[in-house]
Length: 399
Image 1 (cartoon, rainbow, N blue to C red):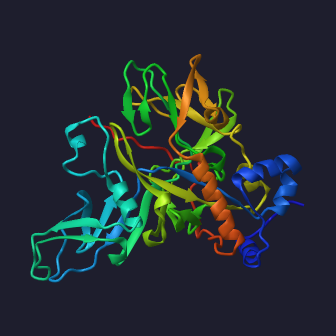
Image 2: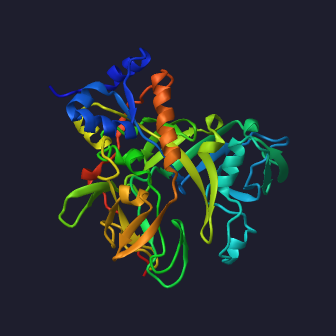
Image 3: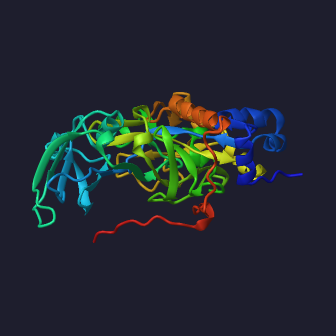
C-alpha cells in the first residue's frame, strides 16, 4: 500500500517528538539500503540546504522618526545608497549596491571592497552603521539632513526580503576565450583554465522537489540562521528539466523563490557580505527547506544523488548564450565535486562558489529544530508553478 501523509499528520508527529527526519544526504543511503517504499513508510521529512551567493537579495529597514521629523529622500548606510521611494523613514538596501565613490563606478576592474551585502552582515552582527540622509523638507517633515550611527537594535523593523533566492540549478561556467574574464561566477581563466559552479547538488532545496509539490506560499524555511517563509515564486522563475542527448531527464533547472524573514532573528555566519573581483558585491545566504514526504513520488526526487543530478556547462566569454541544455554539454554534481571535469576533451579543475559543508550544516540544523519540536512545517496556501506550467523566459529586445 502506497504512503499518503498530510501536513497535519506530520506536524502532530513533530509535536509528539516522534517524527522521523533525515537530511537529503542521509535519505539517499536509506533508499539505497532498503528501497523507496519502505523508506517512504518510515520517513516524515527530508531537510535540505544551500549556502551560496544570492544577488537578488536585500532588506527593508525602518529607522524610526527623528526630532524634528524628516522625510528621507536620499539615504546611505556606510556610504552605500539605499532606495527610499517608499515612505518617510523606510528604505530598501540591495546587496549588490556599492558606494558612489567606489572605483568600480569608473570601470576599475579590481576588488569591490564593500557593498549592500556587507551592510546587512554588519547589521546582523550588531555593529554600528553610519546613517546619512538628505531631504528637501516639507511642512510636516521639516528636517533636511541627518548623520548618525545606528544598529539593528535601534530599528523598528528590519525585514530580509529576497526577490530571487535558492536558484534551483545553475550553470557550470567556463571561458573559451584567450583572456581572463571577471563574472558573477567568479574569475574564469582563459582557454578552459577552470570551471566554477554554485549549486549544492544533492542538498539543493529546489532540486529535491523539482515539481514544486510541497513548496509554495507559506512554506516555512531556514533563512539566514532564523525562520523565514516563501512568499512567492522568485523573479525569473522558469522551472523545467535538463535532458541529455537521448532526451532523458537528468536534472531540473530554473526555479527560484522569493523569501522573507525577520533580520533581527538572523545570524552573521549565515548572511555574509561577498565581493567578486571585477564584478561586484553580493550576499552569501544560508537557506534550507524541509521536504515533507507526503508520498513515494516526493521521496523519489528527494533521494536523487549527485551522480543523478547534472548542471549545464556554459561558456561565459561571449555574452554566455541560452543555458537550456548547456551549450557545452552536461556534467554531474559528482563530477563537479571530484575537483575536475572534462570539456572538449580537456581536463579542467572545478571550483565551487557555494559551500557544501555549510549546506550540510544547514540541513542538519533544520533537522535538529524539527526533532526538538521547535520548527513545524508550513503548509503552502498555494503551490508555486512547476515544470509543467510552461513558463518561458522573456528577453528585452532593444532595436
